[in-house]
Image (cartoon, rainbow, N blue to C red):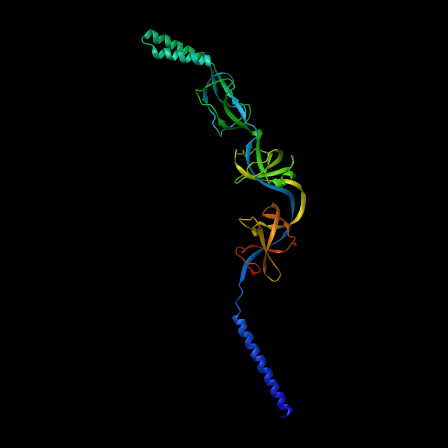
Amino acid sequence: MTNLSRRLIAVLCLAALLALGSCTRGDSEEQRPHEPIVPIRVEQLRSFTFEDQVQATGQWRSKADLIVAAPFAGVLGAVLARAGDALRAGATIGTMTTLESHATLKGAELLLREARDPSARAEAERAVAQARHDLVQVPIAVTESGIIVRRSAEPGAQLAEGAEILALAPWTGFVFEAHVPAGQGPSVHPGQRALIEEEGRPARAARVERILPAADPTDQTTLVWLAPTTLSPAPQLQHFGSTSITIGAAHASIAVPDSAVVEDDLTGEKRVALVDPTMRAHWTRVLLGAGLAGWHELKSPALRPGTNVVVEGQRGLPDRARVTFAP
C-alpha cells in the first residue's frame, strides 16, 4: 500500500469519527430539557436621604378627662350633649334645679291633681304657677373645648353636689399613644419629631411629649405619648394609626422599592430578587430601615446603586431562574 493510500484512509477515518461525535452531541442537546425564561420588570437601587426613625402603631387617647359635675345638690334637667359630641368652651349642656324649688313645684302639682272642687283647683293652679315662676334652674356649661366621652346621669336624676354629669376629653389633652417596640424604646426622647398616619386622613405632625414609665402588659412595648401640632381634622378617640418617630439626623443610604419586597407571613423575613449580569435572579434576604415615598432604606446587605431588583414577576420565581425584561 502506497503512502498516498495510507493518508487517504486516515483522513476518511477521522472524518467518520467527527461525524459520529457531531450526531451524538445533537442527540444529547435534543434530549436536554428546555430551561424557561421568565419575563420580569425591574427597578434599579437608588440612593435616598433618610432619617433614623422608629416605626410604631398606636391609637388616640385622652390624657385626662374633664369631669362636668353638679354645682349643687339638685335635680338634673334636660341634658343636650351625648357621647361623641364635640363642644366648644362655654357651651351649655343642660340645667340643674335646686332641691327646694323642685320640691315646691312637685308639691303644688300634687295639690292640683288632688283638687276636688273649683275653689281648691283654682288655689292649686295659682300655687303651681307661683312654683314655676320661683323655680331655680342653673345652666351647666363646659369650661374647655373637647369631645364628650361619656354621660353619667340622665334627666330627672337627683344628684348630690359634685356628682358627675358627663366627662369631656379636652382638645388640649388629646395624645396619640404609640406602642414602640421594646428594643427601640431607649432611643425615643421627649421633643423628637413624629408623623402620625391614619387611613383616609392626611398625615399629622407631632412631637414626643412623654415616655410612660410602665410598659404595655400585653406586648411589653414602650408607651409613648405624641402631642399633635394641629387638631384639624379632629382626632377620633380610640382610632388606630401608625407613627414614624425621628430619632437621628438625615443620612444618605441605598434604598429598595417597596414593590420589590416579599415578606414571609410566618417569620416576617423580607427578601428581594436581584438580577445578575447573566440575567439570572437571585433571592436575597434584606434588612430594611426607614421608609420614604414608596422606598425603604436598605440596611443590609451592602449593594451598589444601579443593581437591578425585580418589582414585577417575582411571585413564585425560583432562585437562579433565567429572566428577561418584559416589554
